Length: 286
Image 1 (cartoon, rainbow, N blue to C red):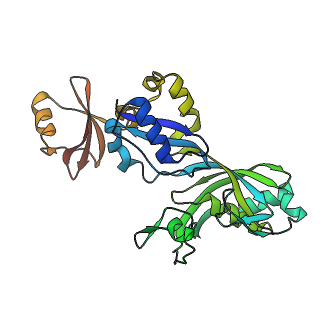
Image 2: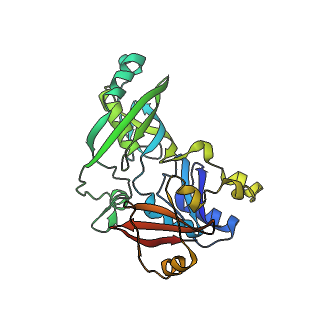
Image 3: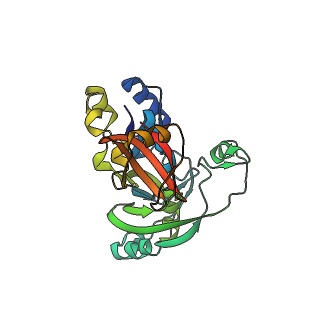
């Protein structure tokens, strides 16, 4: 079994927890995920299975869509619901006014610098930031360039604001939540987070761990094969002679533009090749 399975990660599971559970259910050792999702977050987590693990290089720069909730009036040391409250502040009436909140959210659209959370997994001098944070150690964090493509208000419920946002890779939603609360004239933290989309993988495709436990056969219908993943790429058909050379690692002359291509032989999908400077070489062979 080779490909990508989109999992709807449950709350209080780490990404590694999900991999461990699926390794046991699917009885496979070759399995991994494409990027961590906070334990207290839910939603889309693409899992790579078998030769699908070779797709990781094609999944590193995807933008994402999240649904997040900000709890106003309190700030925590971790910027989420798991942390210790370190500051409390009154919530002004305007911070709960629908039109004003929409105006503030709109102001966050566009390219900007963001300082990553101290409780992120970014490494500084070989150690993850959250390792420094847990020991109370200070470390310089360099801002990152991010982009917020869209952000929209979903609801205001007492002291909680829920919104959806479409962001670039590397955007920290807990930091965004804290910054929004500050601009609303108070403090706040991310109380809930659901990742609804990663690149082309959306929540509607996702299956739960419980569904898998009940019916393992569902994987056959839900797995995105390597061929499916590259469905928008052009095909190249090789005859037996050129296929043998291709499989042996020989770069074949190719007059097509530089790109990724699906390779076929006798109408059978063979794998993926990359054409660069008129040389076609193998990348993934199923």
